[in-house]
Amino acid sequence: MIEFSLRHRFAGGAELAIDFTAPAGATALFGPSGAGKSSVVAVIAGLLAAEAARVIVDGVVLTDTAQRIHVPTEKRRLGLVFQDAKLFPHMKVRDNLRYGLRRAPEQTIGFDEVVDLLGIAPLLERRPHTLSGGERQRVAIGRALLAQPRLLLMDEPLASLDAARKAEILPYLARLKQTLALPIVYVTHAMDEVLAIADTLVLIEGGQTRACGPLGELTARGDMPLATRDDAGAVLEARVAEHHPARQLSLLRAGPLALWVPLVAGNLGARLRVRIPAREIILATEAPAGISLHNVLPVLVVAITLDAARHTAMVELGSGEARLLARITPDAVARLGLRPGCAVLALVKSMSVDVLA
Amino acid sequence: MAGRSVAIGLPVAVVLAWVLARCRFPGRAALDALVHLPMVLPPVVVGWLLLLLLGVRGPVGAWLNDWFGVRLVFTTAGAAIACAAMALPLMVRAVRLSIEAIDPGLEQAARTLGAGRLDRLLTITLPLALPGVLSGAIVGYVASLGEFGAVITFAANIPGETQTLPLAIYAALQTPDGEATAAKLALVSILLAVAGLAAAEWAGRRARAALGYRR
Image 1 (cartoon, rainbow over the protein chains, first blue to last red):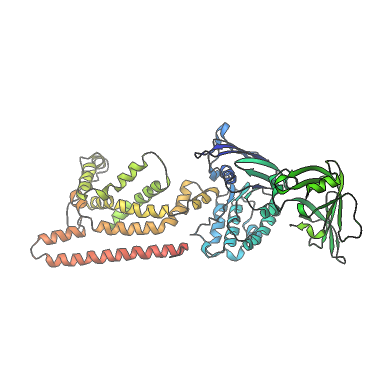
Image 2 (cartoon, rainbow over the protein chains, first blue to last red):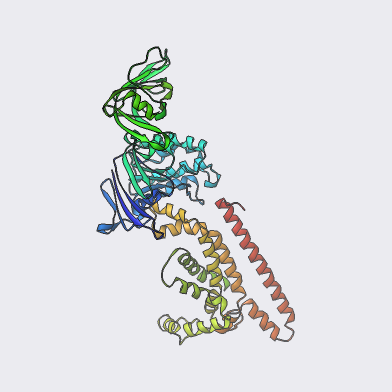
């Protein structure tokens, strides 16, 4: 659990007013460059002394300007991963990894475990300048983890990597999140990283918190800046319910919603994260007949937000806890007579369900 | 004697270089100017200032003499101190440049990994500044060999004790038939200078290659 509050005015006049509370798990700070995300990281790490700030991680007060508490960075026990790996060039990979480990008070995350988790065993005897960008970043993550941090702070860790290197590291991050019960604060301006890692999303814009909440909830809101993106779409936490190898289909369940998708890997009961792009959803008041479609989901209209710039309407849909977001034309909203509270059918092609991890 | 001068001067130079490169405090500019003073002052003035400060009647010299019975004036140790004072700006410069070239992000990373100030200096800053420290040592050594004004003022010209190369050459030139001796000494001086510069270059290259910098 992380409690964060920051008020700061920079010499240049820029102001920050950022607050959020994040439960355990991975919290993504998402927003455009220059929005103040990195200042949040600097304040959490104790590298920036703000005019007014409060940082509490799992009940430990790291910064509280009101009580004049400021734990020095080296005593905070935070694993910080920078955009460029910042490996020590005069040490082998092994010694880089051990640097924080040797200075940690106790050891709960083991050396071999981390080396194994990040797949860096073949690199141990090498020097940082002989590694590729992706390898370097994996070593940097390992080094931060081995310092036995109470929180892993990642400031755009993949921003300097190309798409291929990024795709190489993302699975390691997802695995790490599942294996180690370690809170993560992850700063990024890339949506794919948010979708792969975040449980909680904090939207930051112009030095202010725009919203803070569970990823599934915020991605399904029609009135969020996320909804104006081309790739808007709700994220759902699902479980594998059935495999039908003969039909080459799997059935996933997200709350009361049942989703047919092309056969996926994963045992029955395994957790999967899926995303349904808003523009791929069709709304209907009657079930269509004689159609290739598999997913006809009975839902209720929760809210309708008009996006004037795009001449579209964002329709939030709900079924129990599960939320979906559909982008349709305002004309369709009028023709179907959609209003909050209406029962409606959401039609989703099985191909349109992105299975993330 | 030149070796002792480096041994005295280098640690001081490293600390000063680190303070000037990485710390921000009032009086930093004044300290910077003070360190560079021997470079712009005539060496004889530096020697005379040392004489005032460390002479048997000087504030520090008297204290050393009374409490420890140590006399620096007209001794080898004194000559080494005079050389160290003269070589200090050169050494500080070399070390400081290499400290300033280190990415502060590396020290920040060490900090987040739990390393305190002294820990970071010893495990990150100094090893990475090693090329600068080495070349500072070599430049300091060569400069100490060639010191004239400050040494003759503070420690006089005592053969085998406080005589540096230029002092010996000067002394040789003052004696009849000393030309041959002076020429030999001058040759030694040239060889030492060339060897020193080459060694500095080599050490720098080795260290940079080990750190993976491209040449």
